[in-house]
Image (tube, rainbow, N blue to C red):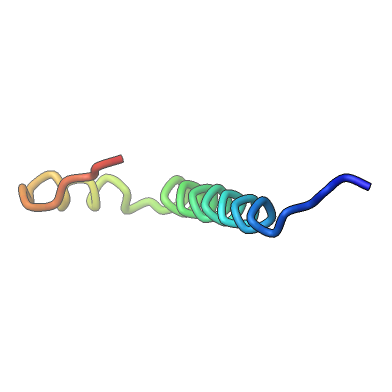
Length: 52
């Protein structure tokens, strides 16, 4: 039997959750027609910078 550590499952679940949330956010932003207006709002405000 292969040894399964709980930390591996925790990191795997966190990685899957992060990828799934990024996928949902990207699909949501790609499907909304107000992406250009949102980009204009964020670009006109200099205190909001996307780090990623």
